[in-house]
Length: 533
Image (cartoon, rainbow, N blue to C red; front, side, top):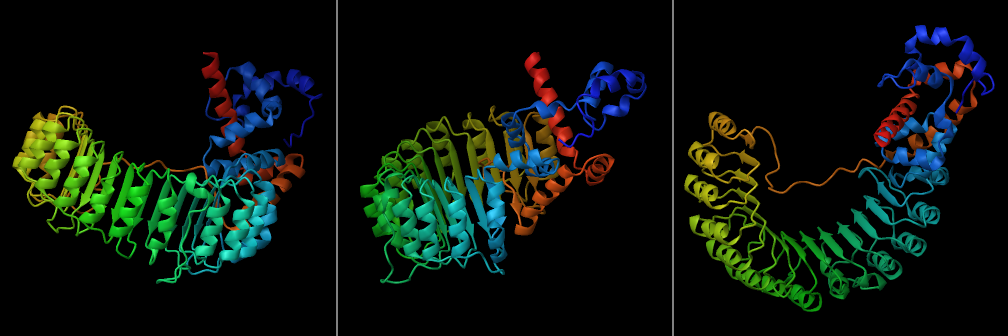
């Protein structure tokens, strides 16, 4: 650990300097400035580094609970911490420019336990090529997740080499890449454990009738989620979707072509789907009727699909009785309204979340939803011309289980807020955005009437998420480093460990390298105190 004093000299120094330590209790500040210790503990801790006795596995467990910044600081404390931090890191995010290639051996010698890797390149820079990806695949044979962003120099050959070396891959996400169908098929033919596939703007797929079909491959039996975004010829993934017998989630965003016929074939062969997202897609009531064959469907998103009408929604509602979440963005087409919503209310009693954007429900459908969907907890009404104070009063009176309500760009006023003050007894949050009839005084009155209710009023000056759902969790376990910076800690760690004496202490103090050690010491003490109590 770079300690300047030997273990044999500790007892004598402890006895001779006992009075000095007692008169200067600040001597332990460098070890743990956050907690106060008794005098005897200060003396022992100042003389001996107990962290040196910790096994590598325990120290690695502590590192894994730290954020990326603290982990970087810990790796600079000494050579041992550098080694343990690298071996215990499972997630890595790298700047995938072409100059990364010469650093790959050193990088993955240090981070030799990586299972989740993100390679992201700036759109204006030259990305890594096939040689770099093949070299990474040789160093990371246990890789389970790979994310590729704007790696435009990768070809089918590079993806084929990767797939043959990383057969344990479970999740692949690629966006703005230029490899084509052969590279994608290589992954599907070699990675039998693949569960999630996300493809966005894959430019290498040939457009037109000459497009090579993708899939199904050996991954068809393991795939559970397929997400296709902004593809000119996304329908060439049809064989894969139809062959994925255990598919649970299908998401199609802004993919060109007529999808009605393909959805008919898919729904006949894959009936286990529980979640379907269709956004800016050429699909009509014919496609919705096909989706109704998925009797286990629980989540349906119809976003800006103007050819879908009440007829299609009724067919889904009557057969998919397990529906829990329904999102509809009507795009002001007025083709989905009370008729479809009443069918949902009458047939889907398990409905928990309803988001309506550009849809005009009236009191008729809202009352039916409130009466027949006792589990409705989250409701969002955005851009609805027919949702005013009367409709809000109906919601306040009837929706007993409602917990979160979002109202955006609707003709609601302070009168509607008065109804919310005495209704919806389980409600915990109300979000109001761009409702011109709602004033700050009305929102303050509602807060005063129901102190436990979180009232969020936005007049349009700030941007907020109109969705009634909660967001996901942030991922703080990764580290994103350009190639040069990723190697730099190796050299810093060796330098700080090889130096001895007062110069080392001064060097570390100037750079703040003891921050990681202080953090770990305090974490250990808190953990020990909790266990002892």
